[in-house]
Image (cartoon, rainbow, N blue to C red; front, top):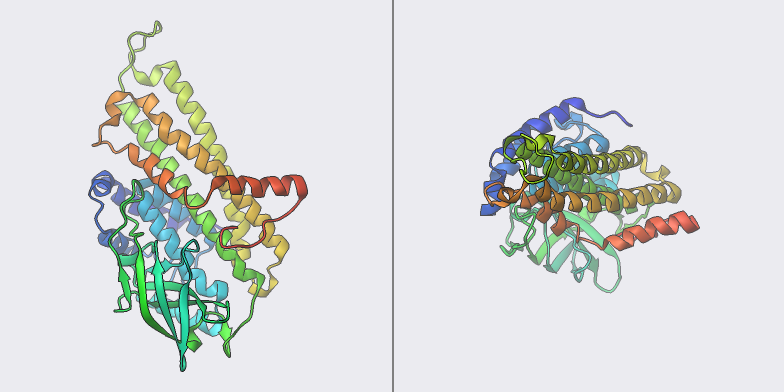
Length: 395
């Protein structure tokens, strides 16, 4: 499956154009992006991966990754929200039974529902106890991206006395879920990624994802959640970097003044050799990163859409390494772009009204999600020793 849904990319660009109009103002205000998520819903982007028979787009992950990127060019926060939504909407396919997949996909697609998740692996797991035919979730998570704008929340915890991890999808608006308004970071300000307290959320045993007669049936496919979401990260990082370069190029064309003390004076900054050299260097690096990200998307999409029983550890390992390489490349390239753009635009470009700093802040904030040196090590171990990353919560 390598077909890109061109019409969906056009639609994503139209949505991005609307988001770009007040992106700087919204970043400054940091308000809950209720209207922005509704914009995604109204344009069908929320159900892009949903089944056609339920009104969804029926598209591939290759298209979804491209759509994430287009949205992130205009607003990195909304790109992240959409990307996380796609992963959590796919979570039932990753670990659920056939019946659960059918039910959840019909529910969210017909209802045009938006997902959030409370599955931060660095925190203690939620505790799950049994109460008759129900599971009861309790605990606290430091991060819950999408929180107050979500309709559904993915929970994950460990069943008391067993060590068994259980995923469940529950309504976000219920007394047992309290989202705390404590997301106050330098970047990705509109992602609603604050903490959450889970108090007595009940889930019927039949809704425990992937469990049949209270037993889980594991597949290699279950472990694709990490490479899939790492490539979500990678694509909105790429979108942020592309947005940074595009916005800065526009600023240079419209506002940057030529430097009159260089000995080779030009009438326009767009003719200055150091400006051309600088943008040429950044554009070449960005194109290279984009090519690697595209390659990773083309590689994982057919695996995610393949029959689940057919996915092998070899296929999973190969794509995980490729995604690790793509991630490290766009993080370093994107951070360089986010810094060097000010050298090419001049002092006036640092005014807060232009918001050019938001690109670096957004990428710097989320790229700390898990240490980049570990991604480099994964690639190095593959290059030197031919070893694939062992599946964990982060690899």
